[in-house]
Image (cartoon, rainbow over the protein chains, first blue to last red):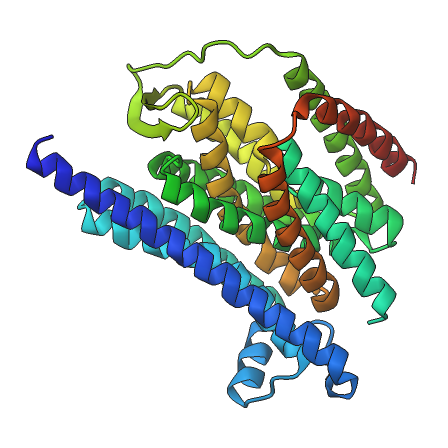
Length: 128
Length: 270
């Protein structure tokens, strides 16, 4: 195999491995947060804080930054982290295609990222 | 949360995830009827829960497929433009539809899935046609045949159109949409079945995330239900993937296709 093709193939496999790692880490971190929330709530039911049944992303971030790790916040944090995992995967793809200098697919994956960002902004707009 | 609800959700999610993986469906196809019919969860909450479960199983499965190099990342990213657009529109539309309309649409989807499963079970697998004159060349190592399969992608515009529909159904009804994408990629675009399944699974997480934030914003995400069911589905799908290597799936496909027809009628009549 010519050297240039070999380098490109290795770079491509590295990008695939990194994308796979991002997904795996995302799933384990979010699953851990959800399990922690469920266990915490089962062991110490009195710590369940009735977050409004309809929290905003801002509420959640503020509660976590203030150190309020009650069961509901932990579960929501796990769910939101899981929802962000595929978005992190798209960001990894943009970087990976950039490393490969495949500008056409940097553009394609940027469009996907733009659509997802637009959806998050829309969600914040309708919810606050 | 009462312990009995916790166990029911975890077990229901586990069973939905296991059989979803065994039958090549996402967990959502079985999880939503379980949540709505057995546990009485409102339709919008059941869809939001299923979307979370779909993200979890797709992400875990895609990580494995990426290491096996069966995913065609470029094709996946290109089709994601269509699935994400469809999913966002589906997620927005779903919040303006009543639970009973969504239940009837889901019932129609189950009926369609059951027919596709029966059609697949009756098919005799022959040699897969491989096209080398298309675009976006891809390759993967086939463990079963012990050879590298090289292929190209044909009819990308047609695959993009089907992907918009798949994304829309995903956002509207909380399923992965692989039931549309895999046949489209395989039959229309000439992608080998293993690569089509892996690429579809890779795309499903992003498609589901596209509508997840909308359901979250509308307050349909119940943290107890979604966390418990998603963990159950995740554990179930991992078990299903392991078990599927050891069992013959054709009889199982027939049984579940008939069961899905029954569930479809029950959901329609609710």
